[in-house]
Image (cartoon, rainbow, N blue to C red; front, side, top):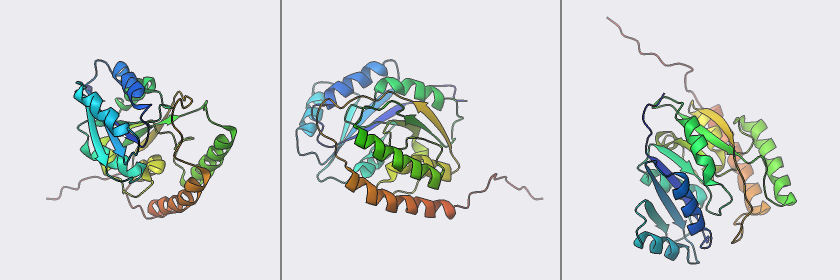
Length: 247
């Protein structure tokens, strides 16, 4: 059991979300008041004013805001990976930059995280039980989640939810590959970690447009799923490891 509250790093990948940045940032600050935290925005090659909005906010005195930038888009997984690498916190909270994840859900997930001993591997995965998406998108998600859950056994009904909490050291122990963010629960289980699910709020997008569609999700998702299955089958972690002291 953790006895002191660790520093928290909130990592947010963004691409062309200029109108969603400040409202989301304000919500995060309001939610984490009293916590030791930082907010890391990773601008993934935005072509709108996202980076300018972030820099202006930092220049106006937001001491908790850190900014990483990519000259060209490298993808969400790379943005998250580099954000976690740069993080100073022991615990990482990730959420999408479009404002559909609710930062008000983070404290409950942190409480769940603090039940684990220091050094444990785990992932608290958000579950968007009541989603504000189109019927077409919901159908795609249900099919994808059903297939993935049966194939990978990742103990979560909604691995696509961007809101997750996990130790920094756990994430950095995982194999890195493009699109890995979609398979975090399965990868954490592979390294011996535990998955817990937390029901979270989901909101309609108020500005901007989604960067994903069925075509750019389905094919790469299928290929990556079989790649993760390959990793699982070649895992050789023992159930228990014990030091042997010999005379």
